[in-house]
Length: 179
Image (cartoon, rainbow, N blue to C red; front, side, top):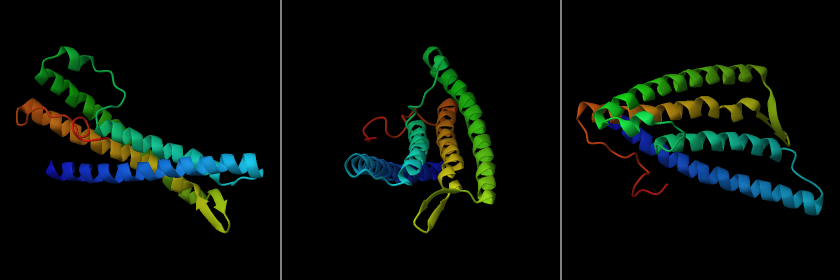
């Protein structure tokens, strides 16, 4: 469990830095496109596809962070009306189901990315440099795997609560730690 916790913490830091850089790049590129089109009547042909795919990356990394902080979309009737031990058991079952689905989606999207690699499609060309389509799609298996890791860590925490080995704990980012 300590290994998963450390891995989770390291990934949290990397994701946050990457999200800030990606979002800053997106704002700068979109702003540049607006200025170039409206003032100079030109634009970067590769910027729009890049921005569309950056939104996909932003969404998956944001979903991973939301899962990390237990702030993703959920319907939690059991947690509201059951006693803590029963709510933890219901949470474990829900997390297990979610974990399996995320792992299946990660595997399916990995197959998809491998197929895209075989097609050799180009997303954008910047001068002589061609960006393969699969580069932008790598976030699919990685994103689902990150969410699965976050679900696994939460499930292990809930299992500790259920078995009485640990006190209920808030996920990182909830209190004290800035998001």
